[in-house]
Length: 59
Image 1 (cartoon, rainbow, N blue to C red):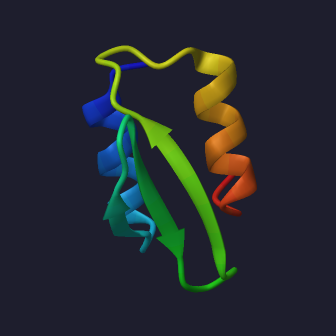
Image 2 (cartoon, helix red, strand yellow):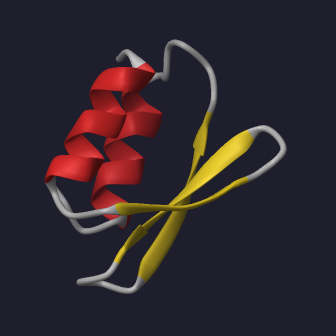
């Protein structure tokens, strides 16, 4: 999955960019109070993308 597509999904679901890290960006879901790092690779493995969405309470 393209990183840009995943970021669009996160933002559309109400998640916010909490901060930029060294190699990851940290996204926060205010509804579930969960934080999750998102790598800055152009392509993100489908399994990892599903895990990020599930952990943040989106799918």
